[in-house]
Length: 211
Ligand SMILES: *[C@@H]1O[C@H](CO)[C@@H](O)[C@H](O)[C@H]1NC(C)=O
Ligand SMILES: *[C@@H]1O[C@H](CO)[C@@H](O)[C@H](O)[C@H]1NC(C)=O
Ligand SMILES: *[C@@H]1O[C@H](CO)[C@@H](O)[C@H](O)[C@H]1NC(C)=O
Image (cartoon, rainbow, N blue to C red; front, top):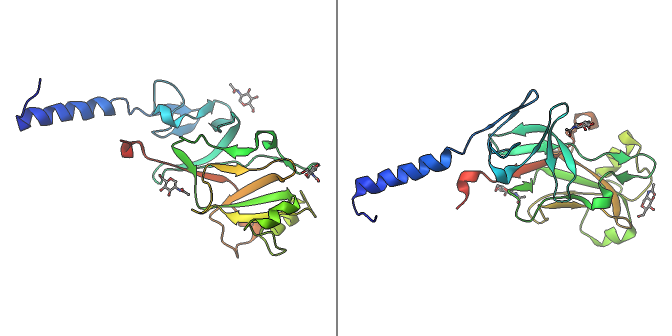
């Protein structure tokens, strides 16, 4: 039925809004951890475009485009951000545990992106990387990491800020490229290493902005 009555029209609109928000149900806690909307651990709660995995014992995990789970170490639902624990770097080989998958990757159509507050460090790089605009100098921040972690010592390393000039869907590593990486959030260049905030920060697009 088509009506030009503004009252009926707005009623229809209200019904539509009420209907669409009725599915905006947050998910139950994952163990002791809150799961803020739109994150979804089940088909019947949250928004299905924001799937995360709940392991009752170890907490929430984010599943990458290549099917690798990364532990979620913090969530700030107000600013639509969450932080993942970077993959383990194998001490003996200087390889990230997700090297075989090419590093960290998000689906092209993902509602998440890698935020511009990440400073990424790449280790055990081949000389080809020197052609890139990354900072691979002896004063690169990655040299500091070497000192504390004693992984990948003496191998070529580089760092870069994941700003708008970079892809925000991938941190790439590969054999014969750079074989491992880590990331820290909101780095202050002069801050002491023990205050570094290691993590891969993702940001999500709020569902109500969708058309
Ligand atoms: C939860 O995590 C633990 C430790 O990583 C693992 O052993 C277990 O299989 C996981 N459980 C599920 C249901 O994924
Ligand atoms: C560094 O990368 C090369 C290949 O790119 C690999 O053969 C080597 O095992 C890696 N690790 C170390 C410690 O050199
Ligand atoms: C990531 O997504 C957010 C929310 O849509 C957006 O504001 C931000 O600019 C994006 N960040 C990058 C690095 O593209």
